[in-house]
Image (cartoon, rainbow, N blue to C red; front, side, top):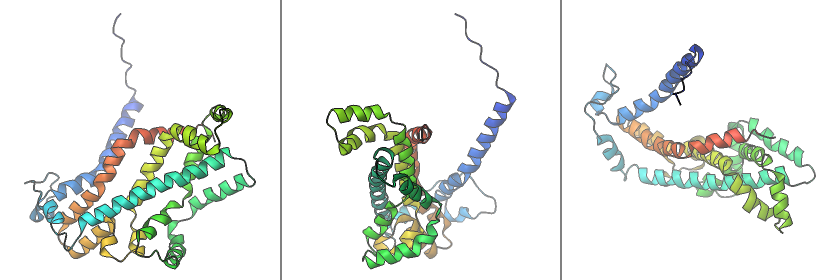
Length: 282
């Protein structure tokens, strides 16, 4: 058999590839500049001629960042961010999947109306609810605590909507077969629905983790203890003290960004699958 001839690339396809490549370069350039600056000496950060490649390469900023724990508890901020983000992510997966299962599979009065109310909350800007939520958290005695950092992040319509759309794409026959074998709603939810919904759960997990990790306004409002601050707030504090040491500030930003990049690289396939499959039926 002869070799198959490759189809020639159309002009439109070539232009699309060039445009997407340029867009990717533009999107990645701030991250590249941040990493480059973190590896520069302070004397070369603000040079008249911008240098994309650090010369010489130095890890002095990273050493200085992590050796000032007595004034700036970077490790504690990093641990707080990880603990809060992981807690919010796991709890959101449980709450959103439970609600989505009820809205997609269970029959009860006012189900569709309640679901529309949940979806309607997605159009409300979070800034509008900051004061009411703060007052509620303060009344509960959760100010300056992990409860105050975690619990308010569990309410949100996006996860319920995303998972409900995915659950609707799962064949009902699977649930009927499980029901005939004696499984109840909880058993069907735990043993049938959740294992089949791994792509959507992974997509929701990464979205939730990124949102919680990058959250700035709420941790700033709800905490005033240095040991309870998260990493984004810590960067602000650090930048305020070192207004001229941009290398250290960029180093702190790079440390804050690294877990997000790693999480995305690990779960990018799941994210694509989850987003693609949530629109099959709804």
